[in-house]
Length: 143
Image (cartoon, rainbow, N blue to C red):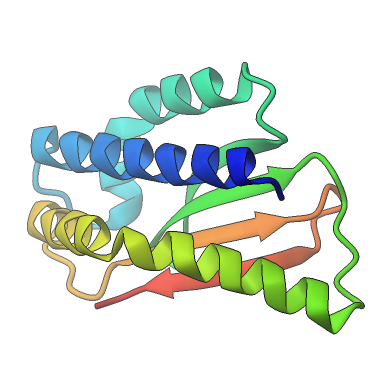
């Protein structure tokens, strides 16, 4: 990935995290993350439509998983060969650095979702997929 692509990923993650925080602040107390997500579905769809209408080298889906994870799922346009350990390590380090830079935002988002749903232990998950759906990277933020 080029420096420009890395910067776009960082900016997008920040925008998404802030958007989700705003949506959480507007939500009502719900019994499950899936219920909370359903109240936000239109806003999430608008966000993904806006992102996916641009040529960023990936598409975005925001979904829930395992009843306790809000997942930002990026499907890359270009397949990455993860058989080369150096490439795999470089990609992991890149996503780890981006993910770590938003730790405080994700922490606030988790706390707000927990407050809105009454569920402790909500995870914010970042997943990157090859075009064929194979997982390149997945990490949960749970602190």
